[in-house]
Image 1 (cartoon, rainbow, N blue to C red):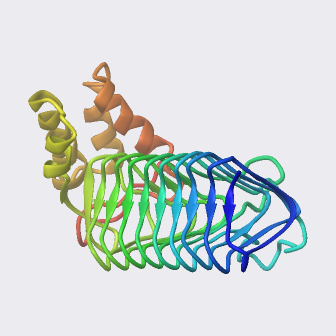
Image 2 (image 1 turned 180 degrees about the vertical axis):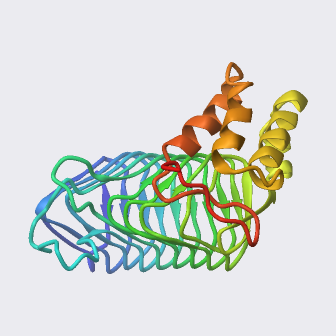
Length: 271
């Protein structure tokens, strides 16, 4: 049987695994859509879950976490459920974390596994966040943001809606981006890819050869001062390398352009 504190409120379609712990003053609202909470989940206190919402196993929610509320989109009727919010397993949500459900009937806002959301971090509607990410205090993901795996953000980072963050990136505290950040790059200022995430690559066991490839890609895209089409042509000369191919596909699919160095124009895939 779930352990539910007497001060908590559960209404509507709420489905709790047998070992879920619901602390004091929590609200689980399944009146608009089901709230499904997997095994091993714990809500310390004053957590508010709003359906449609699915939580996997072993998610930990600290006080004032709010998951699944209506998107902050004036065009979306807050009384419409939509596709909701789907969260994987093993995530930690510290105090004040907020994640909103989707402005879509087809695809939910999606969070992967084993992410650490520090206090007051936020993901907007329709965001897609991978796994093993660390989002420091006050990190803000706008709507429709896509974040891959093993990304680390500093405190107060802001990511504009529809931007993409590649895998194993690192974003410096109080930095911001309105463009896409390619894999393994480091954001050091507003739209400035000032370096690569060398320490992160080493910690994640990348080979010396792959690290050298990332260095070469970074120099080609950011430091060479080649025009966008010319830089991509250089990358295509090594397109048989899966890592280089990953960069080519990332740049070619960018709709916002990518973060480069200070004073340089963003890459535009339409050029």
